[in-house]
Image (cartoon, rainbow, N blue to C red; front, side, top):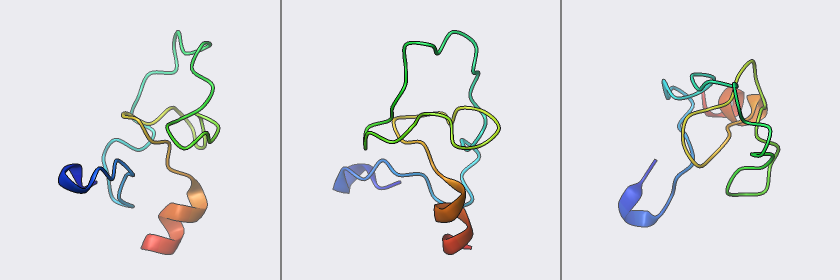
Length: 59
């Protein structure tokens, strides 16, 4: 994430990945990039939902 560059994408090692609560998110369907909100086992914390392909390619 790079706040000064307005980049809110999660890094591959971010502890925010799959760390959010999926309770009460029925109204949140998409992230800031219009991607499906849950890509892994749980929702990510923050404006961006990382996906498995991004995480693997960044490792």
